[in-house]
Image (cartoon, rainbow over all chains, first blue to last red; front, top):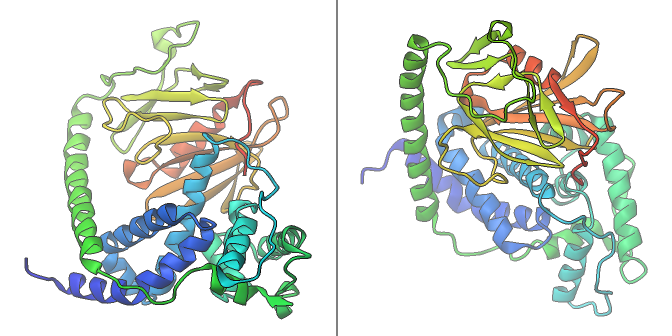
Length: 174
Length: 208
């Protein structure tokens, strides 16, 4: 099959950015690897369909992150209508500190956050986006980002401590 | 003390993994073909609808009291008409009926409406459908005031979501509609549709 310019650019993008997107999706889904893969596939498929627009926008990574976040929130919103109310408690208490257990514990703590709060945490503290950019991705105000961030961090601390003490440097105040 | 960024970095998984972009490319090709076919079919449907205005099939739940035919008004947009004919679906009632669409499922947290004969008959699968949801999430998006109520509109590539707070005599919360952006429905039409959605006492907020 003849590869178009769209195909060439797209393959280049996917090769470079798929793994970072999977990592972002893994945090958004709190470690549900199958759901994370679904999110990434949906996002990348949309990206291909809209590639001319993505190219014009000049920021395919930003476009993909935004699309991934919206897909995640929309999916979770749909899921809420058919799911049991999630518990606020995680079932496992962190006792060991090797990498695998630490990752598991952090993901379990993330799973107790509401989807938008989880998205704020991932955008602000994993992708290192500033408040304005986070608000733009989520389609909300900077005030909402600040309040959601604050609530999310309080919740994470309450869930993780004292086994794990969490700092977030100056971003809490920003 | 653990920096949150470090914790998230560890939890996110490996930073290097083999990537085969061909599967994504194949999915992209298929999706683009589907989109082009849908657009072509949509154009044909629009032409067909223009010649048979008012003859669409309505399979939505009929109201207890059938409205006199002369009282039914039609709002037409994007090839799909809305009849001023109320219907009920679970704890929700609607002032307008989209012609040629049917209720696939009504549940305490919302209602799923899809074109008659839509291939995906799963009520909790929302792709390509008109979905009404009731929850407590703060509405976001562009604010629009209409008839004393405030609506928030959020448009993405594929879907448009319009939300508003429930009325004083309804259970407290936010009721929203989500519909595919390619239906051709205008913002005004869908604002009017949402304004005509009434949340009954049996409704329950989705959690989130």
